Image 1 (cartoon, rainbow, N blue to C red):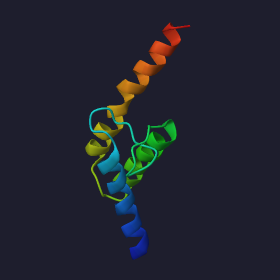
Image 2: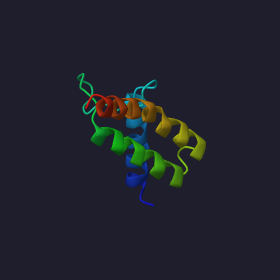
Image 3: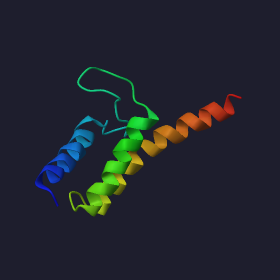
Image 4: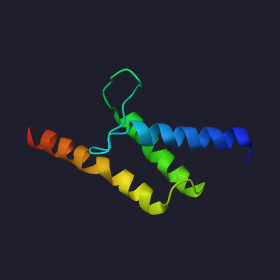
Length: 85
């Protein structure tokens, strides 16, 4: 693999690991300015975890833990939206 791509993949993963909220699993849209989270940003983070496992940057277990953090928040949102209708 190209050294530039190796570096880019590692830096991208680190961005998501550093900016994603450790309690909620939600990823901000922008950084370093404060911004809300979106499903797009969370989706990019989730994708980066899967790629990082394949590239052996993190373990499958680490990816699973990070991936499941946001699940409860997203489920709670959709359940509350459904129940309010």
